[in-house]
Image (cartoon, rainbow, N blue to C red):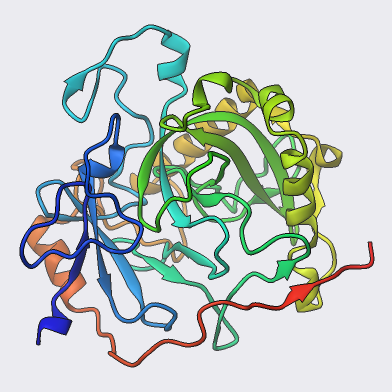
Length: 336
């Protein structure tokens, strides 16, 4: 029966009946947004019914898509007042939800069409999806995730790309030195953005760095990535260009000829996708299959109570069968 107990990950020290998942820290480090949120696994990793649900610090289920704020409060963090040494730094401080730790292959994502939007592994044609290893890379080459409370509206044409959105929260490539854990909620500052065009849809890729990274103070804009991490942007462009080729698909295309836009441009894109999300949550636009159930947006028509949220999670069925093979160890060599 003990194996059936939910597994919690939290930034607080472990106590009886709570097991820290691998990669989680037991110490409350500085500026840890993670301490405000916990995650609960249901089902077996690398299986179609695996889900990672989110809870707030009080232990109430929430939606990471809708209930975690986009911006980090510039007045206080984790309840502690901050020193506003640089106003622009706090204007550029966002919460990022980590879906895929660096060097892993499983294509994990926020389940936008499910109640409370847990993280799950993407499935295509009945098979779990893994990104291929394309020489010289292993899996994802950054910590990959999304900004909460953003939405790329599939019915709204972007003026700069002339393509509509991809119906997802905006993606983030976090370039810090630490390998983060699935379900972490970290504070990041935005450095720039890349406009991937995926099957005719705009799929923005933000470039960001964890503010707790030892080198974070060096990075303020996209040119700093070129200066302090030479080759990383070129590798990022090639990764997105080629990662679908092993599946038999063509190269991906980009707006602006693959040019990375700067921080100012990126912040405008975030502002726009946040406005689209607001319209979605207030039912002012057609969200289609997007599930907008939330616990903390009280004036949203999709708001639910804590008890209703708990019932939604407890109604999710899962098996205890072991998942499939975890990672693909094959390296693909492309004739470019």
